[in-house]
Length: 102
Image: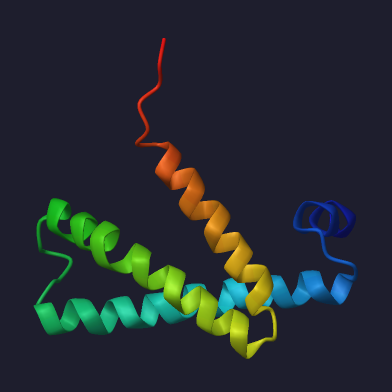
């Protein structure tokens, strides 16, 4: 598994893989915490309509995730890796909205 991740992410050591996984974990926990605070400010609860909760998650939480990911990447010394990762992800998302010619 480590070799596959090293190859996929183009990193040299197993420690790099561990740090990248730690950044993803820290980002996930941070987003859960921030989402709880943000939803609390807006008065969003489990009883709120699902479309509202999902809509806010897509419009607010997903972009916030990208910013927090870069922040944690910087803290752990992997900003360059995560900046390249973000650019790839944004390019892929942009491709979803392109018209295809037949």
